[in-house]
Length: 309
Image (cartoon, rainbow, N blue to C red; front, side, top):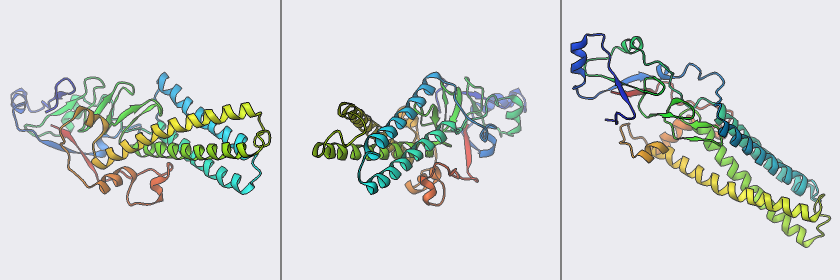
């Protein structure tokens, strides 16, 4: 049983006060609830969190990618005498950067799985047709019926299904509906950072062997400063996003969110294979669409959620 600090019980009382008192002492059950019942009515609408810190972090993310784009194109590729080298690396870098920014936008503007706000009314609870001994949990902060594995986010001010954490870099929670996009964002940022580091090292070696005034359209001091800054940025983001990517994949495979691991919550849901957990996040069946931020995964149309009761 969860701590009362986090959840409070809202007992259906339509059958009389005497019966309501006896329900508190009944054996716990789980009530299967259709996913459509707990899906936010704004799931198909535009989702954006008005948090100053998150907006600033999201803007910084885009500016850093655009800075890398500027250095790669105007410092390393365009001045290069090898046309094939410039075309191949330019195309690869721009494709990875585009996918990274698209994934970031989808992660930021997708409803992470918000539970309808303020639906914990007496009329709605009565409509669930609870049986004797059954209770539902209500979030005291957003006054919503709280399904199993949902947690309240103080920044989004909503309860989020399978909430992993709130990430200021995407200005959103990472939850059931947008975890795929967050994983793709970390993966593509790690790949674009690695690619940029390879090009920086290659360009340094090329400039040392050749005349510095001919290897870039900028002055030698400006070229060195721009390359060092890009190298530092690429190394920092490569380490950070690689760690995040690894932890997210591990979290998906074990079917345990970051909050659940941190709080060491008791596992009360069915255990599935790692492959089934991956398919639940990225969609069924496996295809190249798993790696596309423009493909919306099917999280299981027939899937049901359970209220802890």
